Length: 357
Ligand code: PHE
Image: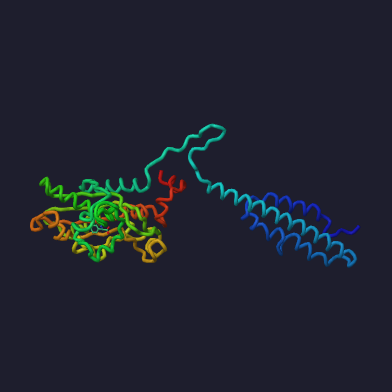
């Protein structure tokens, strides 16, 4: 009997099937596929040798080869389906949520112990930075009268600047006289009043706390958010002192890679006023969805205290001057930890929370 190129076909096919069964991942399968069924595969090479056969043998050999190819291809498809299922199951297992206490057959498995939220951690870190710079920490109420939240800050009723703060009103007293504070600036007023009453000027203080605005949450805003206010009232204070504090803070908190800038801005209670921005850490300044393609993220506002504010609390503007700043604690957390969408801070996804434990 003359030898034919297909003499070993059964063994060769068995070998191909064994190779296929050992492919462990979709990537391996994709890599191996050309050698198994492609143009340079054994099956294709054999196909080309059929020409040497006598015409009466060729038809039979062609049919055997075709069958072998069908078997190999269907094994490959089967393996592909299995590996895809496995990959999907792995991805789902990775996404599994830890829902705390799990009760199985009346045994309670211990829940993980909680920890401070990222915002609380950030607030402590910011306080530490400012305490190291000589500021003390103070807090004020979240429910304020219109006077503290607006009027004493040189924002009289119906002043157009009120539009800068979409306000939640509390249903107390005369309509629209009690508010959920829209910023931490009213705490400045409390501190200055206290200092006047106690004859305890100068003031070097930071005031962290929760604030509320009727904002639609998005990648950079929450309706309930946190600010840290800074206030210095002393003799001979100028804008240069403010710029120095902001620069020192930025370096201390974000490190040397992040740039900050002050841009002219407007606030009724400071003059001159500035907006305080840092390089967007999500895109490193390239422009992205989080920073609305600007490359910068506004952290807050600042400026030299307007004489009208000193007047409102009875501080002599000839002797004392000062500056104030106020910026978002949530924004600081967002930029420090590169959180593309701030809403992650309040969604309580345990995978996100676990990252900051
Ligand atoms: N309170 C201002 C705001 O929330 C920020 C600010 C604070 C601006 C202090 C100047 C001085 O918009």
